[in-house]
Image (cartoon, rainbow, N blue to C red; front, side, top):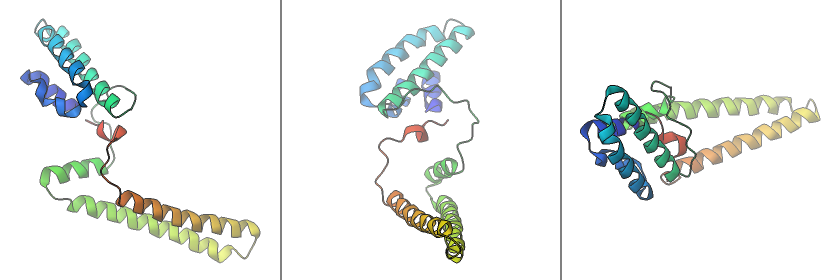
Length: 168
């Protein structure tokens, strides 16, 4: 989103960033764009201030469309984990193979680890009521985790992506 906003400023074309804001935020963004363009031409210092104001407006208006508070622009280079870059690569390449492979490995590792914990506590449940309760808690936790994963896998597209869409 910030990259698109910078491209819009360089090209002097607000249309390049409008897809990143909800329709209700478009008038404010257009107004800010027309305000900063002449300021950008005054000096390098004015350009830097005008650009920062526009970028902050883009992010704030975008987040408002998600129903999320504005928390500032995150510095470039912050880690967004492994999934976002893989998802971006999928979009760019047209193939989800690497993303599916990574998520499959994570899923397998998580289920294996959680099931091993359940099995360990199952072997110890006869030792005390505390172990029996821990076994039941782990067993129900495993089942709840499986259900949550299934719900996530079968969920419709995200309409309110929150922080997921706010990386650079």
